[in-house]
Length: 275
Image (cartoon, rainbow, N blue to C red; front, side, top):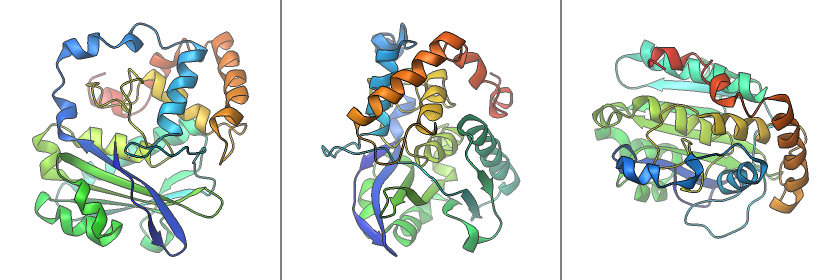
């Protein structure tokens, strides 16, 4: 989840969002979760629109107003393995990429050729984490590692489209906190254009206080909204409101929202984790 914003230049790209999964996200008392009103009912238009604004149009530690950010070019993911269990790690990534492609309708595939990739994902170890973050994201990004399990960052082009992203997962650290799958799911999902985390969005992987490691029904709806053709890159909250209302109204009538919790569990990771 997003910890801090840094602005750096990468070959004409402006990096605008740095995301890290905090250590304490796995240790939230159940009472705090129960206190969140969103648990009672998120399946209404007002709540979903608010959730979209919180997650898609905001950055944590940044009070600026942001427009919609998403990929328009095909996504190609290169996985760099610096530790063992490469087959398992590749399987986890591939399952989640397949799920994201099904939800969004976007062209998302893995590549074995680094030069073809626009997302670079590194499985490393904690002892190399700082050096890997500095190598791929810049020295300033290393300031955000304390208290985090894994980290991701995306960059925009001049048209405000996401054009590149980087994800680094120190496997030993993630496993120690029981967050290996959560790191894969959350960091890849967030670099698709949902960079913020908020306690106002629940149940969701974008809420530090949820125990959920996999996409929820609400996350499924937010992804579908973001990649709907009527939601354009650069749209402000005011500009996006009407098309969001139209889409959500349609999905409330046809059962898409009502069945979202069930539909999202069709992803390959769910039975693997016992859902």
